[in-house]
Image (tube, rainbow, N blue to C red; front, side, top):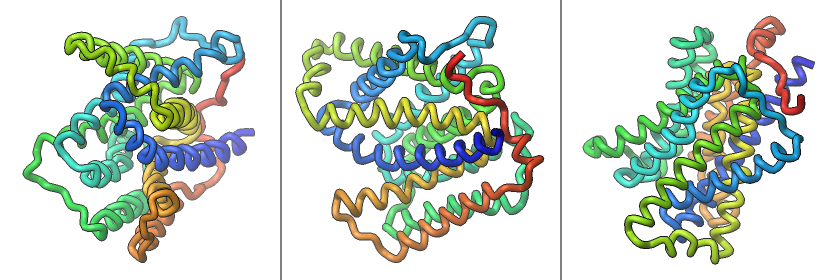
Length: 316
């Protein structure tokens, strides 16, 4: 049973990366009709509403009594609040390519934080594999002609903080999942994201006298499709899959899978946007896959057992 849980965790991390890779396309679509904060407000409102349905029906049972809720609140501060806030404002001062380059370093930050706070040890092979996956992402961006403008201190700093926030989430969630179930962590994350982003959006529109602009995007079909994808799949499903995986495997191993989203983005660009796939795309993708595989090769049954925290208990 334990090995089945580990296998499921690996499968879900691939699903997670695939959904995130597609999310960039739907985020672009949504931002054509609404500003970033409004988009986040609708995104988390839908994700929280969808998960509330099985909670109210008793299909998903939550048990928060006697558990360290303040730590769960701190988790929500790192993700989604910290990550999306720093990312949104960072991209106002920097390019999406610069954001992609810095985001590739998230597994490295996760590995460092996991070593400091969780005492997660990594082998030389695992460290080299993680760096190889990062290099694969950087190779693709550099060959595309992307670079970092180091004179743009504000944008770079905010994007770095967004990566640090996501790395912090990986590490803190790994720790909290000894006490909370993946469903409990996910529901609290989505609820806090919904309340915070919707309150900020509503307050800003009320102050500017533009409340009509808040609901105007809902008349657009493409916007609704985008919000359904971002809210249900890219927020709810990714949170559940990530939290389940983190309950079964080390944070450093889980985080490196995020670089697979770059490969999915390339495939989506080719299929739906008519973008060309070049030799450097293939080389970079191969480096990412080899790096992810090398960082997660099984080291034996003992190591597997140490990597598992507990089974996902959604039903009582």
